[in-house]
Each structure stands twice: as structure tokens, then as C-alpha cells.
Image 1 (cartoon, rainbow, N blue to C red):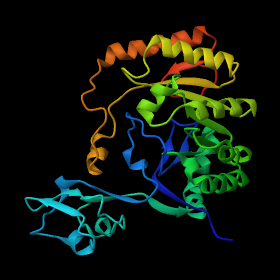
Image 2: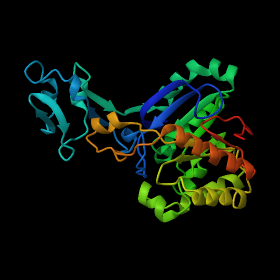
Image 3: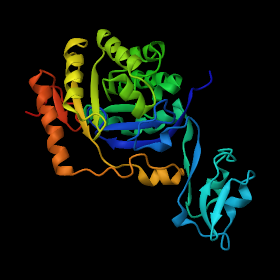
Image 4: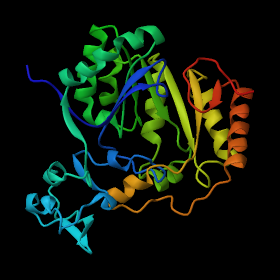
Length: 321
């Protein structure tokens, strides 16, 4: 039987942020959203890409290995140094990255089979047992590769490994449902309660996301929700109140925890490597004042009976008073 294959752009071992205990986390490429604040632009496209780091380039006069490998003429140089990749010409073969001796070109994404992923996971099983940890699959949107996720989690369950899926929940419910029998915990976002505003900042409306969140809770699946608190986007009291109304009303409070993630400028170097403008350029935040604002929102949710923290943990019931 042919193994399911996934395109993974990162594997983090010994992580503690996305699910309980010590975890191995796989990040899959491809996402239907285009969130302005996303810190992982290398996750956006569902295929392997090359990213460039011009400061590492040895120059055409000393090297030129990448040029010899690129049959599309997609590499652009300035003053003899690599400056950009012309996306319209690039075939995403990443032969240039393979040839570069200075790591000035980085391959974003790698194909792996379920069996190859399990080889990594098995190394960490003792840590899971000691900490109550397991495996988390994130993205991008991992359900764009639902076959790989389901296949990997099936193997994890055979070996007694806890499974967590971090998903936008924007795919069709049939796709989400494919993972229900093998997923122990879901993590998702409520980015904004107003669908028009949600579409403005993420590229799609929120109707299916909210519907899938409701269906998950009705199915009795453990669920952690997060709000990435973004200045000028969703940090108004009215939006937080509407979110609380949704959690208390439609979900009847049936979530393990709500986590408020404070905006940080992330991924700027990776945007540059992919020759993409950084969408949050010019957004400056008084960190101390914004942190206090986020803590105030956490206290509000707790007063509404919703277990909420500013930050990430999966300890059920822990609150910011």
C-alpha cells in the first residue's frame, strides 16, 4: 500500500506551546487564508519553494552555482549578488537551493511519508510519556493535506501517542470529520466575529469556521480556541463581547480554554526571503500598554465564565483573574 505523503516546512521537537506536555510538531505547507499578521509566509503556498538570503551570497564572480542549475532564468542579481527570484519564471524545482554552498537559497518545504514522520516521532515517545505530551500537526492549514494528517494520526494512535490538530477550520466539514476518530485535541482561532472584517484581513469570511467550531463542540471533541489580538483589527471591546456571546451562547462554554495571543512582529526576514512585502510594516505597538489591554480582555472572558489566559497553555481551567 502506497504511503501518504505530506509537504512539511518545519518539524519542531520538544515544543510546549501547541498542546499539552512536550510535543513534536509538524508544520504543513499550504493555507487558504492570507492573514495580514501571519508569521509564517513560507506556509502559504501548497508546494515546495525557494527563499533567498542575499547577505549570504558568495557572488557570481566566486560562485554562480545556482545560475548553472536554474534553467528558467528566474534568479535576479544586483551588483553580482543574488537579489530576488522572478516568481513568474521560477519552476519551484529548488535545484538552486540544492546547489548553493553558502545557504543563500533555502528550500521551504520537503516531502515526507507517514513512515518517515513516525521515525522522528518514535524518538520522542519517552518524553511524551513523562510529560503527557504527544504530536501536533499545524500549518498553514494541515487539512489541505488531510490524507497525510489522518494517516499520521492513525499510526500515532496505534502507538498510544496523543494527537493534536491546529487548524483554521475553514475546510468543508467532511474534511474535518475525516480526522475526528484519530484526533485527541483541536486548536483553532476566532480571529473576528464580523465576517466582512474577517474577510478584509484574512481573505475569507468566517461563516464556515464558526459553523465547524460549533460542530466540533457538538461532537464532544476537546477544543482550545485562540484569538490573535491584533491592534486596529480585532482589539475593540465590541468584538471581544461578541466573541464571548458566541462562546457562551452557541458553544455553551464547551471549550477547554481560550488563549489570547498578543501581536508580535514575526517573520519579516522570511517575507523578504520570498520577495513578499511584509503586510504589517509600519505597525508599532507600545508593548507594555498592549499587554495590559490583552490581560484586561482575559479577565473579562473569565468573568463571563470562559476559562481564558493571555498566552498559551493547555492547563484546563487556569485563569487570568
